Amino acid sequence: MTPDRITQQITIKASARRVWAALTDSQQFGHWFGARIDGAFAPGKTVQAEMTMEGVEGLAFGIRVSVMDAPQDFAFFWPAYDFAEKRDRSDLPWTKVEFHLEATPTGTTVTVTESGFDALGGTFGARVRAENNDGWAVQLQRLADFSGAQNA
Image (cartoon, rainbow, N blue to C red):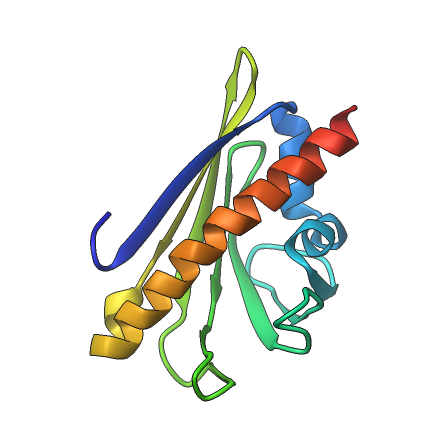
């Protein structure tokens, strides 16, 4: 793990098609991610979202989709959130989130990489990276639980 990047991986007992739908259908994404998404994901489009998960309810943010290459690559940009000040930092460069799916004999391996923390600046960038690193561990498990349940 480099200071500018987070990379995490999980293998989900569900088909790549199923996991792809959970990631790229904005309503399914919102369900497992814990957010209300306003609109469909499409390359070049920015949708607005608001967190519904306990502890971060009401946190509003944008998601600007950059890549939807079915069924393996999905990427978007989003702003950092400053939990200390309880505000979104859309005024700073947005980080890039990339999902890569790979079919395996037991399901689908999902790799998520988030990059661009250096552009946020010094201690703030390092803090956001650490918070998002913890967050992706939780969110990948939520994705696995959702995709596996939907696959049954």
